[in-house]
Length: 316
Image (cartoon, rainbow, N blue to C red):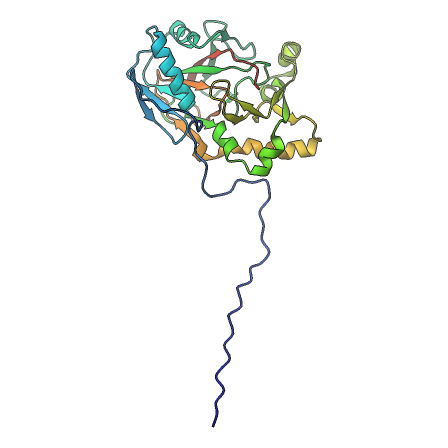
C-alpha cells in the first residue's frame, strides 16, 4: 500500500492592518550627532577646564573668574569653546552689571532692545518674573531678535535670583537639527528664504499701542532658512516659532506646513542641553547656532535674570 506524504505549504505571512503616520513628523531612530564640522581640529584647552553637558551642545567652564579682563589668548580659547559647544556655562560668577557688559564686549558691540524691560543700562535687558506676575517672553523655542536685519551674534545671561525649584533653560543645537532633516526636506529648503517679524512674538503680551511705535524701526526682514555659520561654515536651520512668519514664495498653507515641520526640530532631546540655574550663574551662547527655551514651571516664585546681547552680522 502506497501512502502519499502530507503536503506541506509555507505559512502565509501575517497580514497587518493599514497603518501610516503623517509625513511631517519626528521619528525614533539613530540621530546624527556631530558636535563640530568634519574638518574641525580638536585641541586641548590650556586655560580652563571644559565639562561637557550633552552630546553636541553645552559645556561648563571651570577655573575662570569672569570679573577679570580677558587676555587675547584666553578670549581666543573661549571663542573656540563657544564654537564647539554653542553655549558655555559658568557657575557662581556674581558679576556686577558693568562686569557682565565688559565680558560680553570681548565679542563685539553690545545692542539694546527697546521692546524689553531694561536694567541699569540701555544694553542690559532685565527679566523680573515677580511672584504672581504674568508670564512673558520665555517658554517658547526661539532665537533672539531674528526680526533684525542683523540678529544678535550671542548673549550673556546671568541669573540674579532663582526659584527654589524649576526655572531651567534649555538650548538646542540647530546644526544638529539641520543634519537630521530628511534629505528631501533639505533639498526643498536649499536656497529658501523666510520672513521674520517682531510682531508675532510680542503681540501675545503687548498691546497694539505698545507695539505700533516700533513698526518703522523693525520692518519685516528676510533671512535664509538655512544659514552658514560665519566662523565654522556649518549649515544651520534658521527659523523659529517666535518670529518666522512665512516661507517666501509659498502659499500660506504650504508655508505653514513646512514651518511646522522645521519648528519641531528644536524639540528633539538629543539636540538639547538643559541647565539648572544657581544664583550668580552665567550662560554665554552663540545665538547664530542655537534656539533656547526658558521653562516657566516655578509658579508664584520669583526669577530674575539680566541679559546682555552682542550685535551680529547679516545671515548668509
